[in-house]
Length: 281
Image (tube, rainbow, N blue to C red; front, side, top):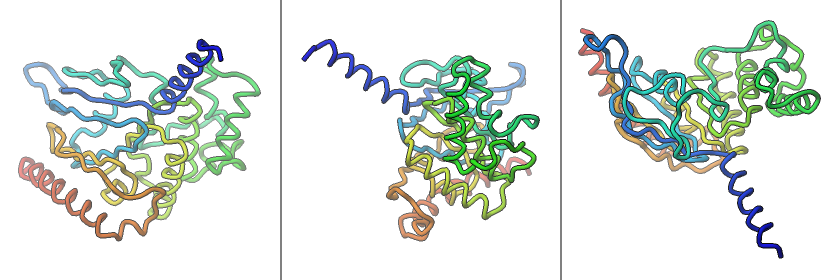
């Protein structure tokens, strides 16, 4: 056996694994807005680990700075102090290794579903032609939009638009998916279905996922790790390891273990919300 071939295969295997998921870390990250003499500190000295291949959910009081955290993780903004790293490399700006699905739909209204999904790779020149279209079509079939690939966003329901956004993110083969309250605004049934659908995708792909939500039950249902934030200026209150088996179903939320997680999270969040209420008075 050629030792060089073996080494090459080992190297390729490691690279393939790295492409699938990545470890994200925030180390001593702080962020303020405004002039120095009147700056508002939003994020204060946050250090938190997002393990590779796991689904970490972030919850916190309303207005605590969750979207600012998303912007820092995505590279849309830079921290004042500290750093964000992916597999040890410092994040200096947006890149295709991190894909964000936002609260509001960002689909291009004058493009079909298929055109929306292929838009990013075409613009960057990463993928072209028939092979790109085929990959996009396969992704749309996978997310249940095979019959809607030639429809425009206005012709899709809210849940369908979210699925199209997931396909548009996944075609870029990111190592990290960042979800900024992606199911907010959906009706209860659509939200429930999207949660189950998203979990199925995650359990198939095992990409590193960072998911922001305001809903405790959603957080516990989805998470491997639950990061609870404080009131502004935001720090990490605690990280709870959610030890529920996968694949998951909603019956698990009625278990004693899930109730314990919910109680712990609610007590922490209620305390932070009361601090915010006291300040606003």
